[in-house]
Every structure is written in structure tokens, then in C-alpha cells.
Image (tube, rainbow, N blue to C red):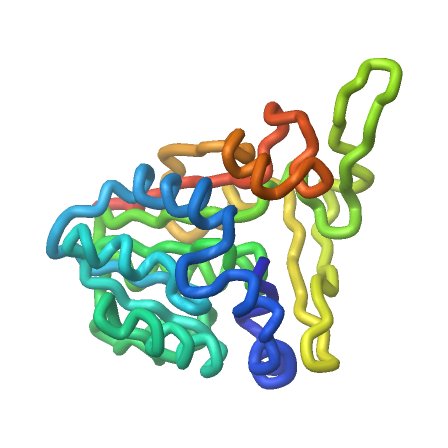
Amino acid sequence: MPSSRSSRRAVTTAWESSDWYLGMVGRRGHLYHRHLALPALLALLEPQPGERLLDVGCGPGVPAPHLARLGVHYTGLDASPRMIAQARKHHARSGTFVVGDARHLRAAVGQNATFDAVSFVFSLQDMHPLEQVLSEAAGVLRPGGRLVAVLTHPCFRVPRQSGWGWDACRKLAYRRVDRYLSPLCVPARRAGGAGTLSFHRPLQDYVAALFAAGMTLEALRELAPTDAMRRQLGRSAAPDNPDIPALLALRARRATG
């Protein structure tokens, strides 16, 4: 998953050398995009023709063609020029792509720009500080506009502090969680000699940051790999316990007052 999009240092030392990520995702997205994240994004977003959407931490722009087909005016923003170059290469007809910092959205999209929706697809858990990022996102939403985020599930996928186990007696795959309530900054991947970062936070921190930004949480969905996806991934990557979710998707709305 993408990491540390909000850090200028990470942009210049890690994401500019992120062939591993571009190779994994490609123009159509990883299996997690195609089977889980994109269907959840569209279901929670409920996009309408003519709406304007800002996709923050867009990477190579995987959601762009799906939203463009529905008549949405898509703008993708990422701090990495390399990611934006890839998005423009593959999806230039589906939207507009800009280099920008999630902590300072108006500097990238314009002081008077407003959007009907903001999305974060596999990016919010890689941005810091959370409160500032969500406050900026709320600030570019029109009153009543909505925010949709899809992220690795913070309750079950704690970087380097959780993993799968196998109970031979019960013949059951289980998820082990060693740490949860304490926020944690974790080096997630080595790329070009520089490490990318991921930021674990308990679910309560996401909810509190949304409320502090003037947003009301409306919906949550917990997503586990589908049968088709698990067959493609193989048992080692997707153990046989479909009752434990991998992703969390949420929708929040900016107050109208």
C-alpha cells in the first residue's frame, strides 16, 4: 500500500523511486483495488454526473476512468511528480492530475476551488498529521459534500504488529494483533534506498479527526477478500478465514450549516 504521501522528504527520496508500487498496481489497480476498494468507493460515494471529485493521494490514478465513465469531473492529487506522470500517461482522458501536498490542498487546487466529494483510496493511512489532512479535505468540500476513504483496516492490519496464525487443532486461520491503541509510525517499504512510511492509528482517532474537521460519519463497511480474489492471491496471501476484514471503507459528510 502507498506510504507517507504527505512528507516532502518521502516524495523526493522514496516515491520517486517507487517502481515496486507502480509495478504492483499498474494502470488497472491491484486485486485489492479491483475486487474491494473500487466497488466500495463507488457504492459509498454514489457519484452523480457533473459532480466534481478530488482524489487525494491518487498515485497512478486508478479510480479515474471508473468515475469518468459516470460523468464525474475527476481531479487526482499526489505529492509525487512520478505518480502524477504515470496517472497522466494512462488516464489523461479521464481527469486532471496535479502535484500537491495533502496538508495544503488549496495551494494546489486553488483558493476558491470547491468539490462535491473528496476521496482517499489507500492513502489516508500514509498521511500525517491526520487532523490537518482531514481539515484541509473538509475545507475544499462544499457544504453537504462527502468524503469517502478506503484504507487498510486499522483494527486488524497493524503494520509489523499483526499477522496470520494457524490453529492446527481447530484447523482455523486467525489474525494475531500485538498492538492496537497506540499510534505508530512504521517504515513500510524500502524503495530506491529510502523507506516509505505508514501511520497506524486506532479507529477512534479517525472518527475524532473527522468530527474535529466538521464532518459527520455516515457509513462504515468492512471488506474481506472475495472468493475469486482469494483464489488468485493464494492461501499464503489470503488465508482461509473470510470473516476477518482486510479493509475499512467509510463515508463522512461536511455539515451544511
